[in-house]
Length: 278
Image 1 (cartoon, rainbow, N blue to C red):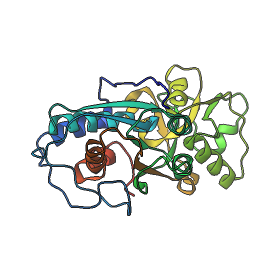
Image 2 (image 1 turned 45 degrees about the vertical axis):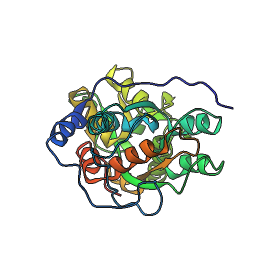
Image 3 (image 1 turned 90 degrees about the vertical axis):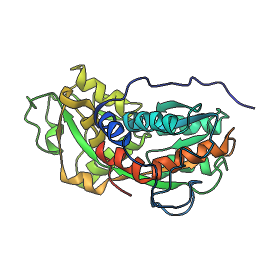
Image 4 (image 1 turned 180 degrees about the horizontal axis):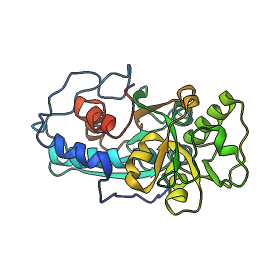
């Protein structure tokens, strides 16, 4: 029995994702081959050729940090396969995983950590083993110009500084806690947010002085925030797995989207958005 969920169709492509999409329009869809079912190794897969007939709607549940790059790839997929449609539900990976195990109709799940993907695989809701397709690293987002002169993770513990973190159950929040532990620091934020975009938005709206988010989100925000790197982030890098879901309505189209994500074209969009190769 399935449960109705809101499906979000993102209409705009932002930041590096848009630039990469323009670059892709002139590229061939040929790439090195590998499994397209989301199983086995984390190497790049082959995107389906535009000449191959793929039809239907692909519903993708994806971590909020993938919003810009996946929106770009969704548009590229629709151009490669006329008549197809890719719809997205972006949010915290833990919330998306709970929706999938609760019966929400979805074809592909792209999580921001193996731990949140495991919620789905433990319930045997995936068709085949998930594959890591990118990695992501944390960065401190500050107000433009960095008026509080934040230069380290330790600076976030200063009295009077309003700092926002992702909830500990969310991959970006778990990574932030791991980085803080590595630095031997304790931090009490003014709020815990349910996904990384919400945490970043607190800084954009000047409701917080800083937030610990992903480098990709800082890059996507452009001049709305300023990023500060910190060495402890290297100890809390997140792997992003993607998987075909067991109840996919059109597995061929869903596999083709996963193949595009893992292909040379997909990797180009993702790396230009700031993601690290797997």
